[in-house]
Amino acid sequence: GSIRFPSSANGIVGLKPTYGRVSRFGVLPLAESLDHVGPMARRVADVAIMLDAIAGADSGDPTSLREPAPDTYRDIGRGVAGLRIGLDREYALAGVDRGEAASIEEALKVLTGLGARVVDVQVPDLAGVIDAAYLLCASEAVAAHAAHYPSRAEDYGPYFREFLQGGARATEAQLADARKVRADFTARLNTVLANVDAIVCPSGGAPAFPISQAAQYGSMTAFNAAVAATLVTSNPPLKSGRVFTAPMDMAGTPAICLPSGFSPE
Image (cartoon, rainbow, N blue to C red; front, top):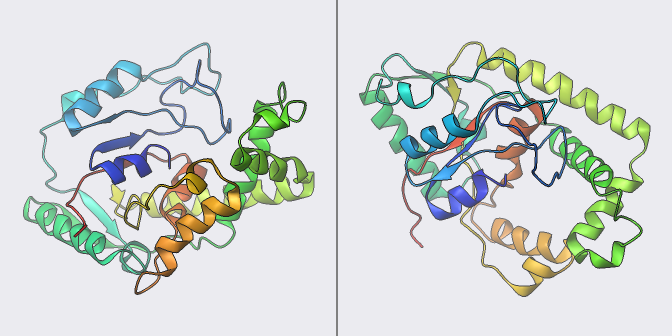
């Protein structure tokens, strides 16, 4: 969510491209199989220009896609007539900040008025997907930091140190199960995407939570408590934003955050 969450919180456009569309060479890795590099800007056209500049195969990154990247900016302005937009109301609108849900529905009305068609879809069951993403991310982060962790564990901040500790405890059997969950979910999501051009959902699902010393520099427990406080105190309680980001990370599918309004705050 490190492209979509800040874009959502700041009302800008953020694009997580297809996995491998942009080289990861030179980027400090978090998790090799989950990391995506993408642009954030004020306007869609600016994001398209940036993507065209940074996309493409790179011998420095063996996971970068070999086929040529599309000319994204060239297609700006073609309109959305005939675009099929998948909507799973339970997934996209239930348990979401009321203002955000309303802005999504209003955006769909605008797109429909411009010729797009909203199609009912069902997002695949997310059981185990979020936990699997967390486990894979943490274990791959341990590999990425092998030169400094655990030999210099005390030089890490408390949150990330705890994250790495969790990854180091993962067993091969657990990781194999997580990879199976990932493969099964990816296949099911691709089946849904075969019938629509895009699926709509929030980029965050909740208003930006207040920053604090504990949330920024404290333990994982303190950070999770700060985030949870913004979810459970709402009426109704809100879904975690990871529900809207981790699935696309796991499947490697592109995702874009588009501004669609402001919260009452």
